[in-house]
Image (cartoon, rainbow, N blue to C red; front, side, top):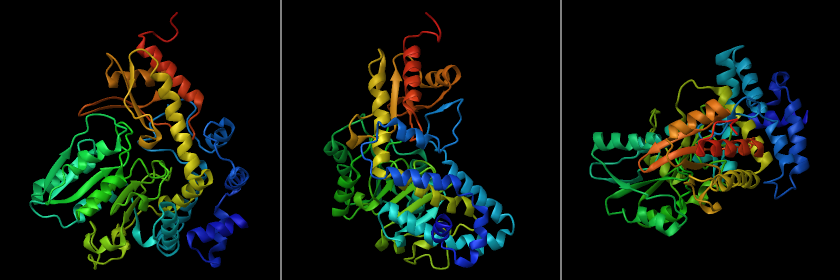
Length: 433
């Protein structure tokens, strides 16, 4: 009954809808609740394999492939999958009734939960489908005029680069490019690359919190503060930082923030979040207009028409799961995993790690290369011969293979990765003497 009441409160449903709860199988969720309650007092669990084995068992990941591309999209815990499937079955009984009259009412409760996780007001949070939609809502919604300058990095995500190139071609704005020579652990040097590009014409700076290609964390707060002093807006691409690094959005000092919830929060596929400072909402037009496009109500950015209500509301379970682990413990584990395998791989002749080592500048993502080997060839061999799924990266001055573990990744998985890298680097065939 406790779990049912919690679910009702989470959805924002009334007691009159209690019979709907016969759909929910809360047995596994209850077991997780007990586990999280019993271990809530534990700190320093980053290397506690017993603790993380229990987390791994909460997922349904394949035993036949080691998935080390969680940076693309992460799997959902089984309780999240079950919740989504239950909502979906419910909606199919009477779609327009259950979607629009029942589940739609749960969005406000969802908004509150996301705002608590993000550390901001619910009136500054809008839900959507992914980072691209969230960030491009700002890019296309801002009143940028011919001659206005936007500062961005050549390492920013392709969708964001293309969106601003589109505005450059259509509206005559000017993109001013930041070029990073390589990974860095000097916040002042990184910040200077951006602030040196600021002029009296700069209206916006795009900041990718965690660089998708190499896992570099940039000093967002330092740059955003410098931008605000000059009247420049700051837009943060948090696709790889939200529910990964340990922070709250206001800590960044930015005006706008977008992320995908199906990455590090492990929410159902096709979920995103847009944060906008309350005093900036009225000045941004929605991509899908409402009757009041200049309203200061964050909900004007949710005018998407019919959407996947089951996927959106099942995100509540993802938040519960994340909070059960705890943001600090989760980040400590993710950093530990990256540190564990990169230190070993770096000892292999011909292998180079292209990601900062320190906590201030990195998390779970890391890029490595093998001298004389193309990224695509390394990726192919890891998958075909060792059952390890990673992603090859070749962009600008970046070339290597990206590895992104998640909370269900074991040390044995990473030992297999390092062994496979050693075999490839030494040009030995698996099983050779």
